[in-house]
Image (cartoon, rainbow, N blue to C red; front, side):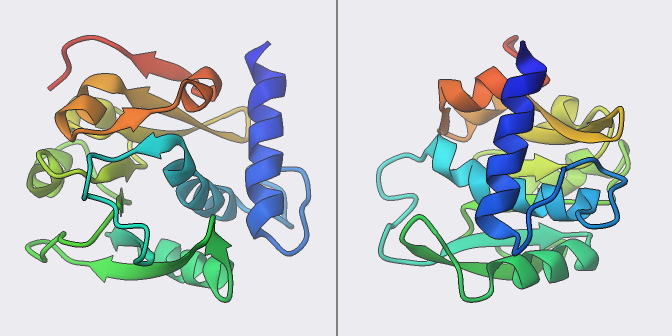
Length: 186
């Protein structure tokens, strides 16, 4: 039952942001896994409630990208001249030690299990949706982590990490997640 819902979510996310929607298999030459992940990064904020004052609606939606220049480039390509809801999207490359002020979403790519705790530490107590792309990343404090299963991009969610950041995730997002961690978490 989850597969059709997830497929519909992926198609909707890709159609909303990609100029020509095609099936969202990760190995599809028309839509790469990276493009699907970038589309998700733009759609996820629509399913998140931030604490009061943490996500000013009169400013651009700002997505920070750490450790993946290719993802930053893909996000810029997907979001140029487009809006998420009524808001323009701003993509900002982030390096270790940079301020995370003003970010609503932080994507941490290409991290290893050993590097993730240090990379995610500055965002732990901030109202930022942290999205990663590494096995076991939920244990390091990520709110959402991408996985690829049978050539399809999926994601898992950590509710404890979301709560720690003051974020409330929509039940619609949780319903299409491959796995939802509900325990105490890190």
